[in-house]
Amino acid sequence: MTDLIEQARAILRGNDRGGYTVPTHRLYPFQWNWDSAFVAMGWATFDEARGFTEVERLLEGQWDDGLVPQIVFHAPSDDYFPGPAVWGVDHTPPTSGITQPPVLASAVRHMLERSQDRAAAEARVAAIYPRLVAYHRWWPRARDPNGSGLVSTMHPWETGMDNSPAWDAALARVPATTITAVQRRDTTHVDATMRPRAEEYQRFIHLVDLFRDVHWQPEKMLAASPFRVADIGTNSILLRAERDLSVLAQRFGQMGDGGEIAARSERMQSAIEKLWDTQLGLFHSLDLIADSPIGVATSGGLLPLYADVANASRAAAMTAMLRRWAGQVRYLVPSTAPNDPRFDALRYWRGPVWAVVNWMIAEGAARAGQPGLAADLRSGTRDMIANGGFSEYFDPRDGGGIGGEDFSWTAAIYLLLG
Image (cartoon, rainbow, N blue to C red):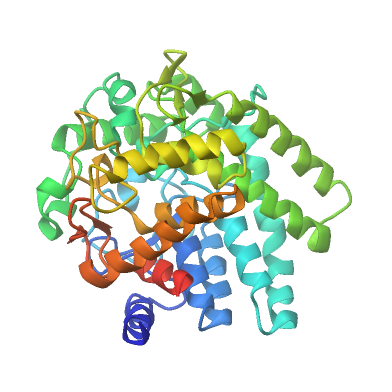
């Protein structure tokens, strides 16, 4: 284990580009939002100051309206498409125009509470806290203006689970781009069988074209987008982050912050509880345009555990469902149910196991009275990394490492599981 810990630390150091960490060399040569939140926690296990620097560098990309973008393009690179020119965002440093699941406040609380140099950590958090508040205010204003309690995502990339089968029907409404020539770089670095398909990329870029044409104005994006879902993963992660922001507000907040955060959290809690799907044995997402539930069993449907939403009976039902999945694959948690006809053990979010998702589910399971599941997920994830390397994701059938190599957030999770 000691050797693997040193390898994990070496991967973070090797992917460090001067205060921010790229997910892996060449395949992802910039700073990604939710990657960096996990990576910051990994850094903090052996270099607390560097962990906070990771967050601060990400927040260099924050927009005036509070949005923390999906990608911050700190330095130019030809190894990734779409780059800053395709996004057309007027910001320094350049950024993408969409966001990702908001792990950031949770990461900051995690680092603060585990800090050895408490005074130094509190000084860093005091400066970061107002930026987190602005981001959390952005979500309901830009993505839930009617106050439903569920925020919408308008691009599969925003969910972090880009080509999940959960988005197939909604994405089918999106036409292929006719404006931007798609010049994929990812399939030159990784086998194409492990990546989203060409037709999905054509639709992904159409949405970028559409949003760029309305100058990334949230109300116009909501009105124009043919893809609009309430992703159970994003909403669960946001609710967890709201709970963590509430704790930070007690120490760093202004008068009224706590009440504001509590009101948002209560709305979200109520709305997410209604997404329980007895037939699936987990929670589902919603297609907000079709106004219908998305009845696809994915790992994202387990993330209400992480948000502390699931009551005891639902937590037990999800555990039982995972035990059934474990009878069909060797390693949990596959990103799509292994009995789903759309399951693909090698293709990105259509089947492979992701260490970051396992970590979140394990954290939630432990709090939800399922310590056995939490322990199994943690030990299984450690074993999977030990056998399959610090890969981007893993084949659930045998634990083989697939996707990018020397991957930062996988290294970070290993350090967190240490």
